[in-house]
Length: 376
Image 1 (tube, rainbow, N blue to C red):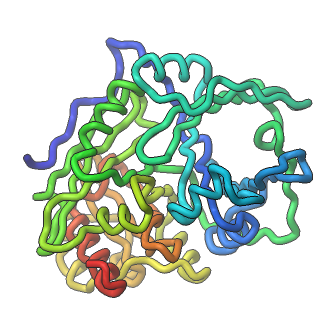
Image 2: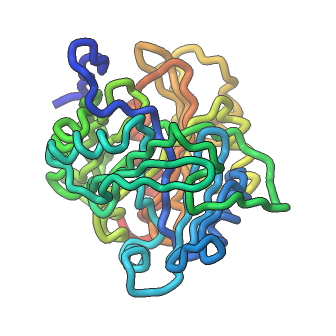
């Protein structure tokens, strides 16, 4: 099987039973939310938004909400051991728990997905305060990750009931991060197709791109991937599984250290990747190194681009194209001590694809990092 592109994801002839308007927020379970919030503000340029904890009546956990443009992260820590959040952190380390999706009707989203086989995580729940109401519901997806459906059309508050505005004297400048472009999940051996079917059947997504081990491989390792998209294309979830290779792939390493399936990386959009990555590097974010040989021939493959090649090479930014344009992308090293979660920074100049032409260079860079850790 070679790379395939599915038909258009428009839904002209069938009603979308789960209309989504993008990512509402991404929630991370972390060992120390206060320190994590400081890190994300310092390194990525997030701004303080909201807080929930003992001071707001929440006795078992604290959550810090940070935002940059349309990108919202929630960082949550348990205050005691022996609970679901603490157990999640012990098993997985810091990682993504919730991929929250914007909906017009959370009750309908729950009903439509559960009747199609979705496993309930949160029954429809209405949260109220003086600023209105937020309606939440949710279902399980791969591993211990969940999707929350967030309806906030009748809410005017800072984030949601139970949170207060978090004002801070420490507000580093933003770095140009805009919104979630896509989130990638790693699943176990032979589990990609069952989860593709889940997104098709339960959430009405379409498989818009498929990559096999001929597309994503090196001398030593390989993986397979399928990209799932909702009807309007606002929400995209590529799903990776390992493929047979001489040595351990990046997906296998993730599964070993995360102790199961989960979110591998969050891809964040920017309108000026050179400026964004330059600033992120100044603040201490480390990115994968790309050999100079990649840049010797990349323009032969992608053609003319608006940017000068020299700063792209200096930063290690990758370039790829499709029929609709080109894209620029770069991948961070893992953000945790465990080689699990990382981030992608992406700028799209018309391209709707996911950088197939960069897979070999990216995989080789990842393998160099794995080899340095002794995990290849």
